Length: 292
Image (cartoon, rainbow, N blue to C red; front, side, top):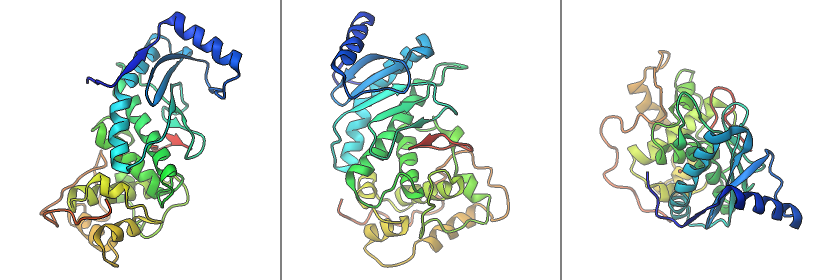
């Protein structure tokens, strides 16, 4: 994949000089892994943990080539412009990603180095973390520490990098249970895989079944996903029964869904021909992929 965004790749000597300069100046940057600065763009400084060796450097260069394109897409969807991120390709425990607090600008993202180096994997994690910062900057109802915000960070990363994160899908974690309503309420944690599964399914339903754009969805933050739907549709109805019924018609309750990804939509006939105009892409596997 190519990217025309301006970027500046630093030589090893230049990276070493930059690291010494940052230390000398006492910059407010204390990375949690010993890392080298690989390159810079308008909105990102990209680092590679030294412990990852040549593979980490290759992944960091991949992130460097994609980050501005992904940033521009997310900025358009949210209608916002966060300032600057430090993206660190790092040996994150569990193979995931994290940042400290929803507005934290230092993003620690794992690298998939075997059986082959997968640059898109880390770029998708960067997207998920950046989405959470957009949510915090927006200051609406998206909450990166709850299931609605976690769901949005997942689906936007999966939208920009289809199939790359299927190994961390959670849709089946909801479909293969008694399917509680996580649309009218949020799980109070971003680590509830069942609630996250409901959230990603609902958001993909909004986009691929009902036809709302990602821009419309991102700019309709609500305290719950049901509130986001009501903002989009301009009605005061409960969307959960229709959403749940459609999935029940295609994935029988009580039977294994055998779904290995998060987006089964559209299912059957599209419910709306076009989206209704409105005021207007951290992932967690079975264990813990992303944490704030």
